[in-house]
Length: 370
Image (tube, rainbow, N blue to C red; front, side, top):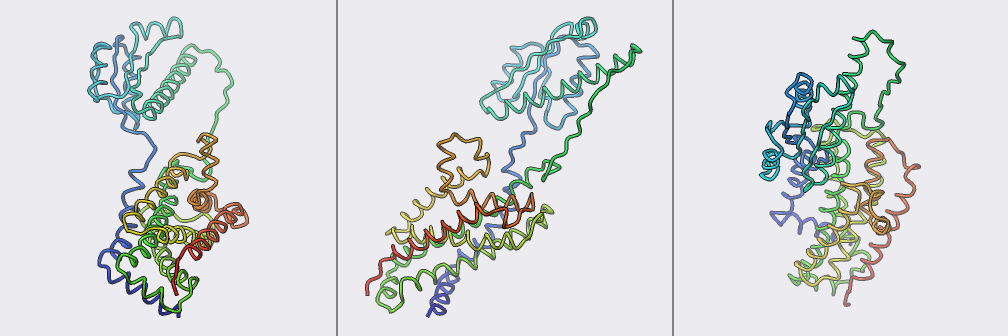
């Protein structure tokens, strides 16, 4: 019986000219575009420089900032008022003002003042821009200090050189961090939205009545709805895994079977949630709105862009009930750290609990008249 129900689901799916295309095109477009757009690295910060000193030291500092990949010199202003106009017009993000006598003060007193003014409308850009500039100036000061000590003939004091080693993502490539999480988002959207629209679509067309008067049990009916989207989820996952290798050279540091193992559970979680929403909805619009509502909350509170640990405590408590958070943790830990199933027991227990909860609810909430 289940065999024929699954066959019916695939025929229903492929008779729709739009759904097969979106299943193929949507993952490709997301994997091609989104890792480049969803990037928290701030570059191309426009900076306006006011150089009151016009000395070799100040010019050297300006050239050092220009050489940085983080900054674009938008203009060299003559006054602070002129630089503020470029901030207000959106041409600049940060103002660097070098005091008069910059070189003289450095040579005579060893201290010189520089004023940084950042446009904090975009607070992330303003904060990181300041951090980048401070780092450049600290490096500049270290260079000058080394040159002075050599030219003065003084013994160079013992120094400690720190060599930074970045574990798991040595080149600090943000795409390596985002691509595994984007695979989870794709599975969530396709395997969540499609089941959510399935049963309610049959309600609107009236075909659900034929199932209601058939001898098909509630459990068999729900299983026949889950299996096609489970297969679709694996197809989408394989497409994403292949694109990750081809486009970004990204392969899991751990066992690929761990990814498939957790994917089996997670697809059941989001498909079960979609079927629950579909059972309780009466129109396609209602199902889409409710699913979209839950999807937005799940994505924003999953740790996709910002770490869960940086959220307020009340928000961290809410994320305990977010299955998306656990699967993103799994994908990142397997891809970046090479974690095994034994190291992911918390995520396994959480996802298994969600899968049982939503699918049992889907069976119970399906109202079948005999």
